[in-house]
Length: 324
Image 1 (spheres, rainbow, N blue to C red):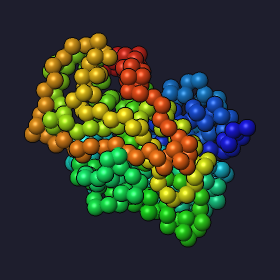
Image 2: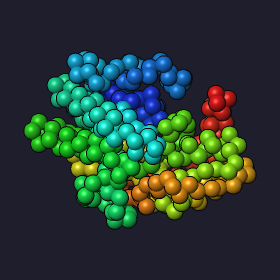
Image 3: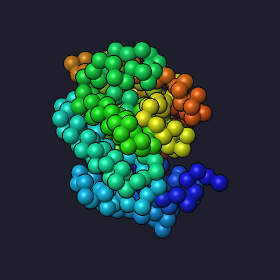
């Protein structure tokens, strides 16, 4: 019997990219799922599960509304977040801090008042400083300050982790914390505020030539496929509901330059690549130490970029291209 079977599970941000995949996985494990989102119109993502889930349009900035929406739930996954690509994050630090902290405050307080059994707070690799050990252990999450281009977002996620710990210390709540690393996959945001993989897929598929890339292409990243990260989140809530962060990532690391080349190759397109060295590179390297996830959760990401990227490209072709 699944840990989630017949449990009432609420997902904030459940109509979003990662949230929608999590919801489907929970439904497959026979959970009774409720989704909270500001975008209740995105029901098309759940076309095969509409009869099995409840979608509520809720503003998590309002505590009273959040309390009502989270009543009678066994578990809550807090995925709702406000974030964009490197340019948006770099130029909106206050907006990102405020719009991530306030909903988290309300969700965790509502969970306390409603006696929710378990809560998972989704943090981010953006908590880490620019110059950190590679692969990065969880112990460096509060070392120095977050990467400057993710300053507001990084501090908001650090705040959320402290919030989880204080509620554990005072109220003995069962709260887990995960730090996902650069998640990608179908249903991602391909718009103007998208992350690097969906942004590059969109530009390549639209025939942009040359492809202009910020920085010099040297920074490296590890990317985790969405289905892998969802598995890690579910294991974290089940096996480790403690305010002790766990990285969710992969050991596969690739430079931005090589990533662009790989997307062009997999798409079947031909395009030149030019680097705008007047723009910021962002963090030089980002890759996590995965030993803690393996030891505590028995979790290991299994999807390689060469397996996951074609699925993103196909999703763009089938569901996004005609809208642009």
